[in-house]
Length: 412
Image (spheres, helix red, strand yellow):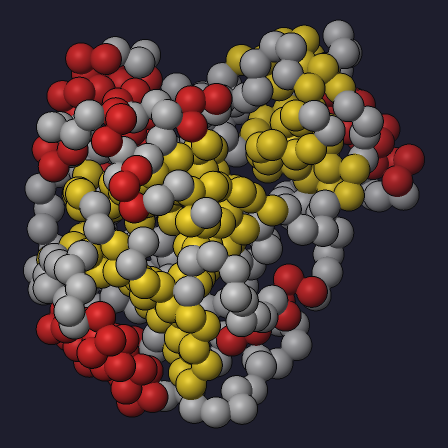
């Protein structure tokens, strides 16, 4: 890590002045520029043009503002040394009950019509992949599918990997795990931008704009040791520790040799919740994988079937047999909408935050004392689509969309 900063500004000119200062202070340093930008559509052209002019080598994306600053412009920036890459590997469609093998291929998607001429033409160099090869863990397939920029890198040369992705990062996550199993991996699922740029998501890489896939950077151990931690604020335990006795695909089939959906409904009734809405469509219920009494992974419950007993999770695969889990509840609350940036004197870090789907409700946006708020040493970006996380060889990549959930890669 060379340098990081998060800027909140009242106006485009105030943000540009701050970015100019960052550029001048970094001018003598080499590296790749990272950015995550949240700004109104009429300001995007001038801001991204300035960023590309200052930093021709860059990767970035459009993000969403932190809820407390939703009426302001936000831009998180960092300067890093590493190997940048572009991935076109397809991800998986959202898991469905009984259809967990369904796949998505981006070249078959219908992209929204372009709504402005702010950006260059989309580079649609989609690669066709055999998803079952990659899912089965074939080492040869993983090597062949790996972004060309990373093919000469040895596993011991990569300590951490950062990337900005569309909403289906499973393909690149699987390839990175297969080739760099001991590295930390932190992926930011860029905000949805169909009403801002006319694209599902908007990714930037060295002057080009992409609507899918991923752009990222592989960091070397020589940059320093890193730790990767995740926080889940506001969750309430519904059950004690339970053991999964059967799972398949993204389904939990049996827990403690019993019906998991009925167990969840009983826990909801005991907690005083209305369990009549079996579909749990408010996205407030989760399954956590426990390790030494702490939440290690978190998966949203997407549906449950009392007759069959199965619970479907919003993940690539449910925790395996023998896993210790808890079922949890996220009460409706307003504190996630008041999440503020706080200056810190801790080590340099990059943080990704899952923001609420809608920022229209809740308390009014915070008011800045000055035209610009600058948080030095911290890259902080938010997205309603969440983030993907993997800590070394001990776990598979998984996605967090819990409002307020935060992953932090810190240099130690």
